[in-house]
Image (cartoon, rainbow, N blue to C red):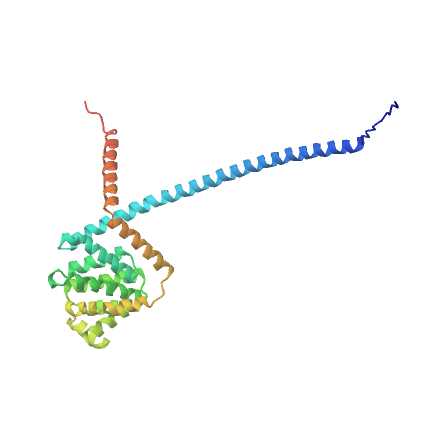
Length: 287
């Protein structure tokens, strides 16, 4: 029986194996480096997230710190306005309804509700004996406010014109000097006055000198409220008027919120009591 011997030869490529090992090591190094970079990126993102959160918290805190004084100031202003209206208004039960009407007038006239309320209370005080309805007085207030806006009068000129008009209503007649002052500050109001009474400017001046422009003639301009309102609607809204509209809406929200009024009232009472207790610590000790 013949014996066959087989020999298998395994050839190992040493160079190829070494290259493979090096490549595996390089891949491992790159993988570790990628992990390191990812960790660094994660830390950077976490740091950025914390920075953003801190910035947002700072801005919110700054906004609240500005909002609280603004809220308190607006609430105090609304409380003062409400007190003025109660003094000027004979029907205390409808004070809230009257305040809402004044907010509406302020919105239509694109002016502050404080200015409108001041004008209304002055006119109400000066027309107590004239049997003027609240609706007519509100329309008169709106026409006067709008007339200053249409005339392009400054705040100082408007204040001067309101003062002259209030004086005229108190005396129940418009004299020559007051008319001249209105001519300088509010031509639109003069035109409304002449139109409402069917006279020209010369006749108006003559009647003013004679003292015959009585309060009932002045109040006739309230009939022009829709006409004047339409003229205002045709005017473009300026940036300052837009901000004024937001301010009026903000004040109206505060004035109509019983919850906010109660909270603020409780806070004021608490702080007043705390201030009194604090002051007592510095009272001299008596034996």
